[in-house]
Length: 327
Ligand code: SF4
Image (tube, rainbow, N blue to C red):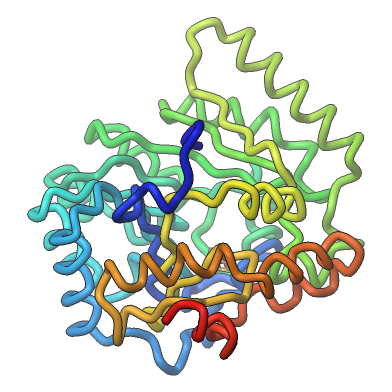
């Protein structure tokens, strides 16, 4: 990510991913966060705490905050956070199921410093999308949201998660993104996390089927000739991702719903805590976390013991050894 450099060269993160809540309306089969209607964490940041944090992120000069969840747009104070960040010069990205983007919300987003909005669409037909995403926005709701974003000139990205049950609609979903005027079609291999990990044997496409789909998507993108929608295919599975990140951590800080700072959503290590630390202190904790022998040992074991990934959505505080090394 930064050739010749390391995260220690950065006095602040280049961007922040903020999982505002773990609550949403869905029970999606492949949800890597195991979010759902009754899945809010008991200790999620209050409105006052979240607003204070947004102010601190802006003051720290963070250029970019990406909101995810759960469903960030379901959080009552989310618009105050957007306004605070936008007024503070921070660009915003949003990951959503689309249900909450009506005309008024699209107009409001257009008035903010929104870099892009990603909407999940897991199939080109309503039954396939609904089967993948029970309880979440319907295909009609998700595509209506994308249409409203495009109409307001907000870069809209369609996010598609491949499984054995919807792989046959991958090309048609790319075509749908094109017909809606989306800026990008975003996908990647199914991540062995959360509910996807729990149902891996039934859900995961074979490597060969995924490789053939990637090839077909590239051909479709090429055949369109205009480069739109941009095709963004994440290259790594989750085991590769955590090994690569250990070698070269990103200058990205992940904030989970209770204000803790995690190394990666696939790892349980949460070395920072923005309820009691400044942004600068939490960033240092994050940097030190990546250099922890315990983290390296855990990642080393994950290849042979993939069941360790069941801890992904936990938040482990720093070990006494790591705390001593940090002081
Ligand atoms: S994928 Fe999104 S909408 Fe579906 S359960 Fe997870 S957070 Fe909720």
